[in-house]
Image (cartoon, rainbow, N blue to C red; front, side):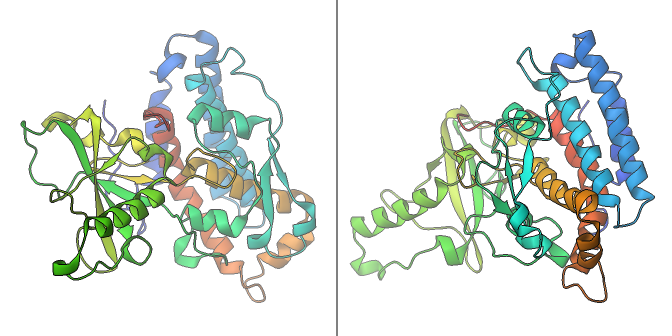
Length: 361
């Protein structure tokens, strides 16, 4: 049965958290993928989801002093459910460690500047492999990860905006569905300041001007691995420009090897390329050191791991970070911890049930 995610919740356009958890509970009667037929996988799927839900319920009843620890364990247990359902390897049940490490030399500063990387093994790396998404082979700051994933964006942690951030891919804006159209087409919404280029006046433009523009856009597209098979659509023979006007422009794309969806397939046509529901999905770039795309599930995981590290091993420093009267990060941390309660249940459900895109699709 196709899930209903709702349209709005606390400014986030999300399903209310209690509904998302009920949707997750419903999965346990009819687990997805390999957990449906393998008794051992089914048992792990059910037990891990039950523990995940209980950790999140405990997190709701806690304050920011300890909430990140409970959120982290709740999310990581959902990762065990994911591996039980979707990991094709025989060693899907191996426990291992968390698989992440905090750079100890950076914990004396702000939360946003603390660096985290994967250890090359462990649960985080295993889940990233199951999703065919980027782990963290090169250490990244918490601030960079939150901005890459637009986590807690209303009260953002300090950090630089990424050169390549998440983008929205949509089937809207290309006219009505047409049986004569053979290739899948979609539009990618991009920031004009980074993607657009000035062309000479119409009378003096040359083919080389258009070719240089296309190469500029292709170079930027190369940072989005799930779009590797997409081709630029030229609105006029040999001509190329971004669509629309203003701060956001559109890049028209097509997939020569994918058919344009029928009326009943529009809502799932873009699922292989990103996270979302309906006629648009969010497409994520690769991360440093990896040729795979980031995934919001893994970005949240890494951020919560660092926050839980402070709670467990640096309680004095954590108390300073969350001091709302003295810390520049206090409000951002509070909001991030509260937003996680709303964002993660739906994200877990999406990640467990939707076909995950891969770079070779």
